[in-house]
Image: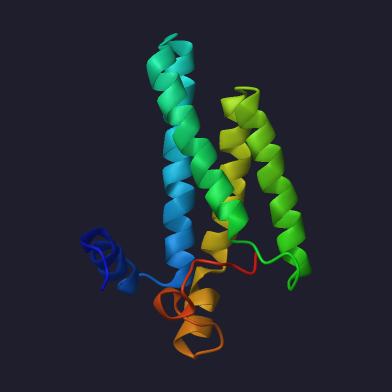
Length: 136
């Protein structure tokens, strides 16, 4: 029996393709990075910590979904995400935002192809695969 929050998540995911879910994660990470940057400039340590943590968590989550054993391109994406995490750690939010936006744009450019692959059954939908693992 699924918890209520699991049911809400399942219903939300059912309406999204795998690549759409990834784009949502990137969007949330970018928003958190931008908020962290604003908090840093305002010297608001409480908000900085909150948004820093959220951005780091989202980028690590995206990274954890990469299948670097099966897909060589995922290794390159993993390296970029590690670079972004380093920038976050150093509170260089401008650079972290820049590279996170570039990665997000790369996925946005192949969105239609990703949706088509999922529609054709060449890659499983998120709900059936039991996770949000990505090839890159």
